[in-house]
Image 1: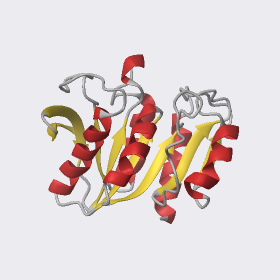
Image 2: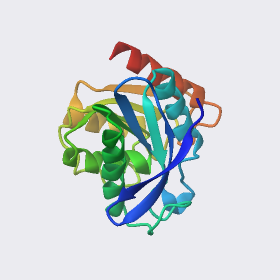
Image 3: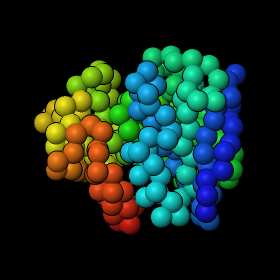
Length: 204
Protein backbone atom coordinates (compact mmCIF):
# COMPACT_ATOMS: atom_id res chain seq x y z
CA UNK A 1 0.00 0.00 0.00
CA UNK A 2 1.29 3.45 -0.87
CA UNK A 3 1.93 6.08 1.76
CA UNK A 4 -0.58 8.92 1.95
CA UNK A 5 0.25 12.53 2.69
CA UNK A 6 -1.10 13.69 6.02
CA UNK A 7 -0.85 16.79 8.20
CA UNK A 8 -0.92 16.71 11.99
CA UNK A 9 -0.51 19.18 14.83
CA UNK A 10 2.61 19.95 16.82
CA UNK A 11 1.59 22.56 19.39
CA UNK A 12 0.41 25.46 17.19
CA UNK A 13 2.10 24.18 14.01
CA UNK A 14 1.00 21.87 11.23
CA UNK A 15 3.52 19.25 10.12
CA UNK A 16 3.64 17.28 6.89
CA UNK A 17 3.98 13.51 7.01
CA UNK A 18 3.63 10.30 5.03
CA UNK A 19 1.43 7.61 6.57
CA UNK A 20 1.15 3.95 5.67
CA UNK A 21 -1.57 2.03 7.49
CA UNK A 22 -0.87 -1.46 8.73
CA UNK A 23 -3.63 -3.83 9.80
CA UNK A 24 -2.67 -4.28 13.47
CA UNK A 25 -2.41 -1.99 16.47
CA UNK A 26 1.35 -1.38 16.16
CA UNK A 27 2.78 1.87 14.82
CA UNK A 28 6.11 3.62 14.48
CA UNK A 29 7.24 7.23 14.12
CA UNK A 30 10.43 7.58 12.06
CA UNK A 31 12.48 10.79 12.26
CA UNK A 32 14.95 12.26 9.79
CA UNK A 33 18.50 13.69 9.89
CA UNK A 34 19.57 17.28 10.50
CA UNK A 35 17.32 19.90 8.84
CA UNK A 36 20.22 22.34 8.40
CA UNK A 37 22.18 19.76 6.39
CA UNK A 38 19.40 18.85 3.98
CA UNK A 39 17.66 16.25 6.14
CA UNK A 40 14.04 15.43 5.38
CA UNK A 41 11.59 12.54 5.56
CA UNK A 42 12.65 11.54 2.03
CA UNK A 43 16.15 10.55 3.22
CA UNK A 44 17.34 7.14 1.97
CA UNK A 45 18.03 5.76 5.47
CA UNK A 46 14.59 6.88 6.69
CA UNK A 47 13.04 5.13 3.69
CA UNK A 48 14.88 1.89 4.47
CA UNK A 49 13.54 1.91 8.05
CA UNK A 50 10.01 2.63 6.78
CA UNK A 51 10.32 -0.32 4.42
CA UNK A 52 11.28 -2.70 7.23
CA UNK A 53 8.41 -1.63 9.48
CA UNK A 54 5.92 -1.80 6.60
CA UNK A 55 7.04 -5.37 5.94
CA UNK A 56 6.25 -6.17 9.58
CA UNK A 57 2.76 -4.68 9.09
CA UNK A 58 3.26 -1.63 11.29
CA UNK A 59 1.47 1.63 10.59
CA UNK A 60 4.36 3.93 9.71
CA UNK A 61 4.54 7.70 10.03
CA UNK A 62 7.55 9.62 8.77
CA UNK A 63 7.33 13.39 8.81
CA UNK A 64 9.21 16.61 8.19
CA UNK A 65 10.36 18.44 11.30
CA UNK A 66 9.25 22.05 11.68
CA UNK A 67 10.65 24.29 8.97
CA UNK A 68 11.27 21.41 6.52
CA UNK A 69 9.24 20.90 3.33
CA UNK A 70 5.61 21.83 3.90
CA UNK A 71 5.86 21.69 7.70
CA UNK A 72 5.26 25.01 9.45
CA UNK A 73 7.64 26.83 11.76
CA UNK A 74 11.43 26.93 11.70
CA UNK A 75 14.41 24.99 13.03
CA UNK A 76 14.58 25.07 16.83
CA UNK A 77 17.85 23.32 17.70
CA UNK A 78 16.20 20.06 18.76
CA UNK A 79 13.92 21.65 21.37
CA UNK A 80 10.80 22.37 19.29
CA UNK A 81 11.56 19.19 17.35
CA UNK A 82 10.92 17.16 20.51
CA UNK A 83 7.40 18.60 20.51
CA UNK A 84 7.11 17.48 16.88
CA UNK A 85 7.90 13.88 17.87
CA UNK A 86 5.32 14.04 20.65
CA UNK A 87 2.76 15.34 18.14
CA UNK A 88 3.54 12.50 15.73
CA UNK A 89 3.14 9.86 18.46
CA UNK A 90 -0.12 11.48 19.59
CA UNK A 91 -1.36 11.41 15.98
CA UNK A 92 -0.78 7.65 15.75
CA UNK A 93 -2.46 7.14 19.12
CA UNK A 94 -5.39 9.14 17.78
CA UNK A 95 -5.70 6.56 15.00
CA UNK A 96 -6.25 3.91 17.68
CA UNK A 97 -2.73 2.46 17.76
CA UNK A 98 -1.81 1.20 21.21
CA UNK A 99 1.76 -0.04 20.61
CA UNK A 100 3.89 2.80 19.23
CA UNK A 101 7.64 2.68 18.65
CA UNK A 102 10.22 5.33 17.74
CA UNK A 103 13.00 5.07 15.18
CA UNK A 104 15.34 7.87 14.21
CA UNK A 105 18.40 8.47 12.09
CA UNK A 106 21.22 10.81 13.12
CA UNK A 107 19.69 14.11 14.33
CA UNK A 108 16.33 12.31 14.46
CA UNK A 109 17.79 9.71 16.84
CA UNK A 110 19.09 12.50 19.09
CA UNK A 111 15.71 14.26 19.17
CA UNK A 112 13.88 10.98 19.90
CA UNK A 113 16.28 10.17 22.73
CA UNK A 114 15.49 13.52 24.38
CA UNK A 115 11.74 13.21 23.84
CA UNK A 116 11.15 9.59 24.85
CA UNK A 117 10.80 10.17 28.58
CA UNK A 118 7.93 12.56 27.89
CA UNK A 119 5.97 9.82 26.09
CA UNK A 120 5.04 6.90 28.31
CA UNK A 121 3.20 5.12 25.51
CA UNK A 122 6.38 4.49 23.48
CA UNK A 123 7.41 0.87 24.05
CA UNK A 124 10.62 0.59 22.02
CA UNK A 125 13.19 2.81 20.33
CA UNK A 126 15.71 2.22 17.55
CA UNK A 127 18.58 4.62 16.86
CA UNK A 128 20.44 4.61 13.53
CA UNK A 129 23.79 6.44 13.72
CA UNK A 130 23.16 8.50 16.87
CA UNK A 131 25.55 11.41 16.22
CA UNK A 132 27.58 11.07 19.43
CA UNK A 133 30.69 12.69 17.88
CA UNK A 134 28.70 15.70 16.67
CA UNK A 135 26.07 16.45 19.35
CA UNK A 136 26.14 15.98 23.14
CA UNK A 137 24.47 12.77 24.36
CA UNK A 138 25.44 13.13 28.04
CA UNK A 139 21.74 13.66 28.92
CA UNK A 140 20.87 10.06 27.96
CA UNK A 141 20.66 7.83 31.00
CA UNK A 142 19.23 4.32 31.37
CA UNK A 143 16.47 4.00 28.78
CA UNK A 144 14.80 0.57 28.74
CA UNK A 145 12.91 1.42 25.54
CA UNK A 146 16.21 1.68 23.64
CA UNK A 147 16.69 -1.79 22.21
CA UNK A 148 18.60 -1.49 18.94
CA UNK A 149 21.38 0.78 17.69
CA UNK A 150 22.78 0.57 14.16
CA UNK A 151 25.88 2.36 12.92
CA UNK A 152 28.50 2.04 10.19
CA UNK A 153 32.02 0.77 10.79
CA UNK A 154 33.33 3.92 9.04
CA UNK A 155 30.81 6.34 10.55
CA UNK A 156 32.86 9.23 11.95
CA UNK A 157 29.74 11.04 13.23
CA UNK A 158 28.46 7.98 15.10
CA UNK A 159 31.71 6.04 15.69
CA UNK A 160 31.15 2.46 16.93
CA UNK A 161 33.83 2.76 19.63
CA UNK A 162 32.13 5.82 21.15
CA UNK A 163 28.71 4.15 21.09
CA UNK A 164 30.15 1.00 22.69
CA UNK A 165 31.48 3.10 25.58
CA UNK A 166 28.15 4.87 26.10
CA UNK A 167 25.87 1.87 25.62
CA UNK A 168 26.11 0.41 29.17
CA UNK A 169 24.77 3.72 30.51
CA UNK A 170 21.95 3.81 27.96
CA UNK A 171 20.83 0.18 28.21
CA UNK A 172 23.34 -2.65 28.57
CA UNK A 173 20.77 -5.07 27.14
CA UNK A 174 20.37 -3.12 23.87
CA UNK A 175 21.81 -4.61 20.69
CA UNK A 176 24.48 -2.73 18.71
CA UNK A 177 24.80 -3.74 15.05
CA UNK A 178 27.75 -2.40 13.04
CA UNK A 179 27.50 -2.42 9.24
CA UNK A 180 30.88 -3.06 7.63
CA UNK A 181 31.94 -0.67 4.88
CA UNK A 182 29.27 1.91 5.80
CA UNK A 183 29.86 5.55 6.67
CA UNK A 184 27.27 7.96 8.06
CA UNK A 185 25.37 8.15 4.78
CA UNK A 186 25.08 4.39 4.09
CA UNK A 187 25.60 4.61 0.32
CA UNK A 188 24.74 1.19 -1.08
CA UNK A 189 24.15 -0.14 2.45
CA UNK A 190 20.54 0.82 3.21
CA UNK A 191 19.36 -2.70 2.39
CA UNK A 192 21.43 -3.93 5.33
CA UNK A 193 19.70 -1.44 7.64
CA UNK A 194 16.31 -2.76 6.50
CA UNK A 195 17.42 -6.37 7.04
CA UNK A 196 18.67 -5.66 10.58
CA UNK A 197 15.43 -3.87 11.51
CA UNK A 198 13.33 -6.67 9.98
CA UNK A 199 15.20 -9.30 12.00
CA UNK A 200 14.81 -7.24 15.17
CA UNK A 201 11.04 -6.92 14.65
CA UNK A 202 10.66 -10.67 14.03
CA UNK A 203 12.35 -11.58 17.31
CA UNK A 204 10.46 -8.99 19.35
